[in-house]
Amino acid sequence: MTEEVAPAVDEAPAPAAEVAPAEVAPAAAAPTSLDPVAPADNPWYTSVPDEWRKDLVGDDEAALNTLQRVPDIKTLGKNYIEAQAALRAKQDLNTALPENPTDEQLSEYREKNNVPATAEGYLDGLSEGLVLNDEDKAELGPLFETLHNANVDSGTAAALVEQQLAIENARVEKVQQQDVLDAQQSTELMKKNWGPDFEVNKNLIKATLQAHLPEAVLDDFLSARLANGKAVFNDPGVMQAFASMARVINPAATLVPTGVNAVQTLAGRQKEIESKMGTDEYYSSGLDKEYLANQTALDTLNSRQGS
Image (cartoon, rainbow, N blue to C red; front, side, top):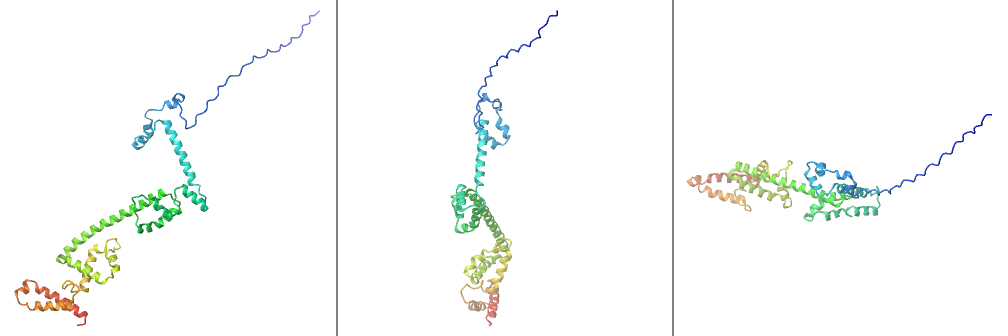
């Protein structure tokens, strides 16, 4: 009889041993970008070369001197982040004004951005040593209005105004220096051309202009300039022309004193000279030349009077 074999029964697998969960250390708080990190915790920080300042700026001595005031590279990073934050804040403030602001919004914006309430307020922001007269203020008025409409802050406006004044002062100084040079050159040439008549012609021109130009415009005329910028009376050609005109206008100007009757004075002098004609004195003392000049002046004056 065949022996029956009981079928094999799969034994249930032994239960797996329980594994205790691994202990997880609490995560350390990540340092913020501005928190200092101890060198022991930051291998990169300890690897920064000693000459990191020079490595950053090279041979730029000004920049290197600035970096010398920064104790370490971590502080440099902190300073950079703070500077960027301040710059963004300023940019946000400068763009805070809406396109069509109300009076209240505009007033608030100007107060925050150091813009004066009125255009005249820019005068208060100028350097204490800068003195402006009424003419200066009147000339700067349109500039102040433009700056105020653009909401330019007082510091920037002051820098612009002072630079403009410096440029204008430099221009005036250059003109004055050129005037001195032109006057020297003109005087030298006139002395050469006029000889002993130099002072006579100068006084004659001045007396003629004073006699025929209204006092209200005389100073303006004497300080007038030609199209090329040269002062009128620093031009030798102009001086020569005025001397010639003065002699035509007043032929006796160099012969008799101002304010006397020229015809009577010249006629009387002619009689004196005539009494000495034929003598040695007449020719040796130049009476002959004086007589000719007096007679020419008398003829001109008499012709104008219809004599």
